[in-house]
Image (cartoon, rainbow, N blue to C red; front, side, top):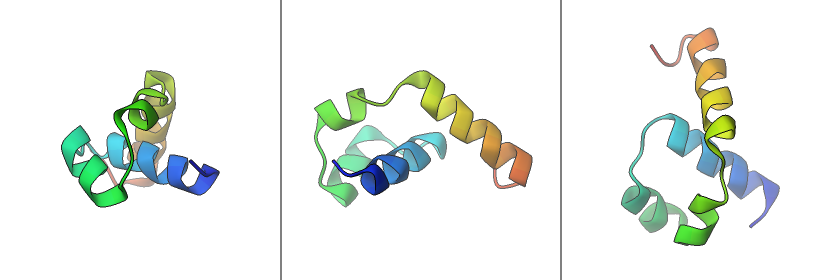
Length: 55
């Protein structure tokens, strides 16, 4: 998985997309999703809240 794909995966998880939606749209595996840490997701969520994209 490239760094760009990983960033998009983290973004999708931060926005609350389901694992199945992500796997279908991005053609990635459960292992790829499991490779993302909760800290990475929370950091991304905090950024989007700060920017006003999430509440």
